[in-house]
Image (cartoon, rainbow, N blue to C red; front, side, top):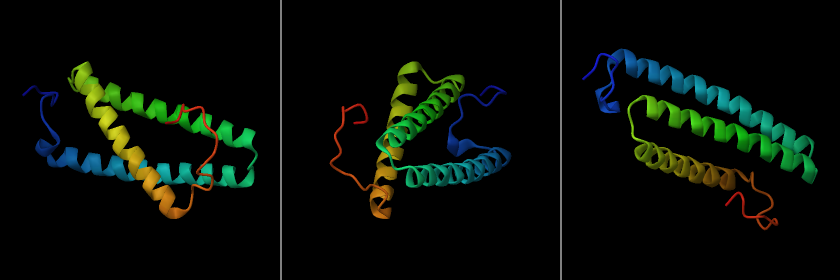
Length: 121
């Protein structure tokens, strides 16, 4: 194993790394909660279709940036491009499915038969 830690998996984190990962997770979840509330407020305050589409575009761009950041981290950890695609796309789909289930349970999805271009599917 190199001094940089490459080649180790999550089960092999040091105590300091595990604490840092936990701290990062707490910080990111707090920030995401603030972001999600801001998005909810904007969509509830300005319900026009143009505004909703603009918000969707903004959020999608932010999600793409986060997904790319995950890919960069995995690449820098030594994963092959194929492994990065497999790992990140699987995690993305899992997170997306969980978010849809949570949104449906919370009643956040109010228009289930809206016309679509299929771009979000």
